[in-house]
Length: 149
Image 1: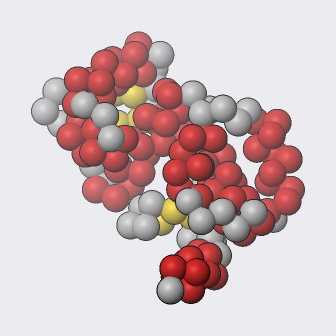
Image 2 (image 1 turned 180 degrees about the horizontal axis):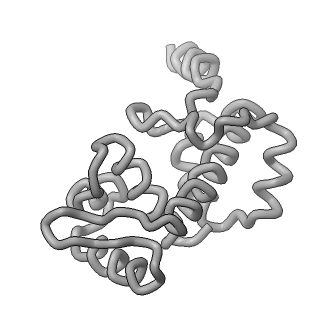
């Protein structure tokens, strides 16, 4: 997955939560980048036919953009679930964000066979927690709290 895919994923999630085009500010907050960076990437995505952008309204994914965003989100969920459910990595979110830009489709597919992905993925992604709804986080958080005591 590349940076463009990370933006597509963010636009997809923000659109789902707000039920309207994704505002530049919301994307900047979600991606932890400047609004200028968001505008620059949106322009590039628009040139590729993945996003439609209307000034003061926000960015909306095209049909092709939705497909790419869902694939990117699914890959992210696979990485996240592998890190938590299989490897029991405490800092799984930070690790997943680092890995999502370097893991290719082949590796994601192989990880997918290990985690036994749910058929509704990526719709299982919970925007409120910014994580896959099928994470087994409770055990990891409980272990982290216990070791901190």
